[in-house]
Length: 402
Image (tube, rainbow, N blue to C red; front, side, top):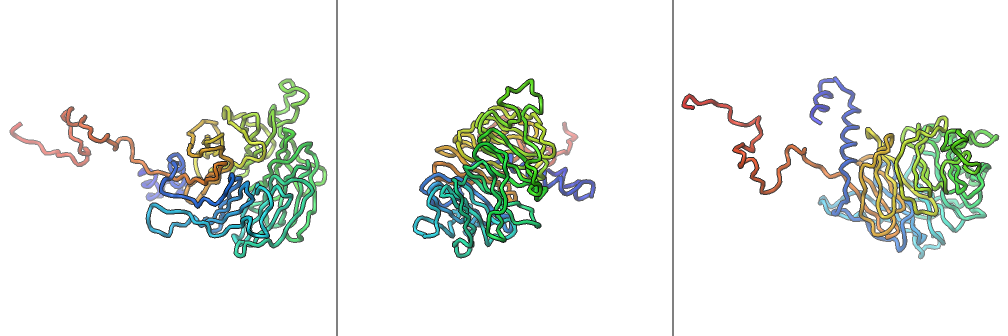
């Protein structure tokens, strides 16, 4: 780290390299923070988390009990031990609350005064975060599994919605109506994601084992369908042609630069794709346990080198190197299956929610370099007749009597 600082001070290195190195070091030291609690409000599993990017201060959670909670992550106590307080709750006592499980919650990307939620009660609701009352509601004929708003769109205000119907629904926040459907899947839509690079590019994952990439300006259908065999029909059976996984595809996540797309499936596999041409990069992550029968919310780090993937695997969260597939570590702390995770890029922290109704905070733990760490009570240096003083401060005077 000192080398990065000296190179930056001398103008020999890009300051971004120092930032990336420090972010990477912090992510590699993530541990469960026993000093930070998150108010336990949900009476059932936590399905979705989202942290707004305007201030990086407020977090939303949606639960299987139909409850939506708004948290303030700021520490006002001035002490290491504190609790992230719930500052707003839409629970069953509210006449505006969802009737069934809330599957997805998401902040409006450009203003933390609004957020959107979708639920098994066949509705998607647009909320005012000040009053916690819905400003708009969209009704659907089938169960809603997921929704997503583009993080960069300036020319449209579309929300993509996945339901039990095999058509991807596009809703316009400006007009308050459904304006378009994308047809091509043969099964229920379990996940949808807009590209963070191109505002008109959308990916959808379905129970039909397929992932389609769309340009919503085109009427001719999807741009392409992801094929795990990269077009080699000799490796695929007739049923597996143009399939992304050998099971239900229930998770999608673009990398921060939008150049790659990650998918997860019930075949216990995670795959990395080139989002430009749909090519399978063939990165091997090994077995990634996936027990979810609906959408799985996983996430990718931002600002690190290399980047890391955080994916719920049973009761734990697996951490993988994005481009090599290396299993870096496993974060254990939930008492039941983990269902969602959200990365806080400002502080390199991770929040996870699970069926145990808990939201856990994983934070970087600073560690001294290994060369500076001595076991407590160690007398190895004394036994070797060597001083434990840093050589830079050792006495270098010579004596004529020796």
